[in-house]
Image 1: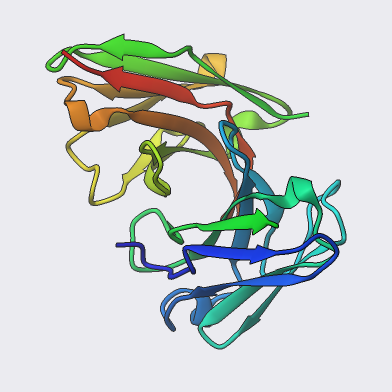
Image 2: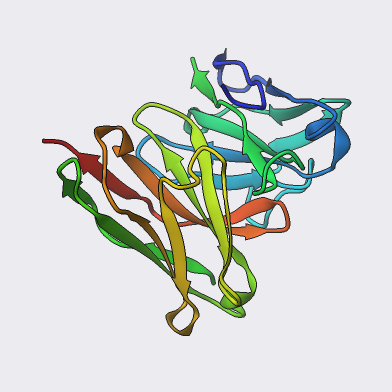
Length: 112
Length: 117
């Protein structure tokens, strides 16, 4: 069982916006501003799309945005495109493990 | 540009040993934590452990402590993940990653390990 809870799946039509939630505790998401999000297309390695809650790496579309409220972080994808169909994983720093990091279980985004 | 180049896919039998590698390139590479992430077929991402190349300080996830060994050769910017006795349940894709602050900024292409009799 993952320490961070994500919905198993979400879906949306092209052009719409969707939000993926990631729920943790005060020991991880709620206690630190170190939430990151990763996109993984089938058969490919994940890539970083959001770090430190709401920062986008160079080259990542402005359609991807991140936020946090209390123990829940969110990833919003606006103006959905077919290529956004992928698995999305959240991650947060936590002091509860020697590694300092934990992943969510992942969310499958389907673009209808 | 940072790149993490992992060794190729492996097919092994239960009980065999294995060591896979991850060679990094880019400025100041040894001054970063390099980690290994497991992804079992159809499943999510799991942290296995991390190593700081500059001094080989190593940390393991409790789930993987004693099950694998992470090591590194700073002189060639390479990290390793090894098993002394593989099990069928070790079948997975293993990603080498670079950790920046508390996120992963670079991922290797993955190494598929298949353990089957």
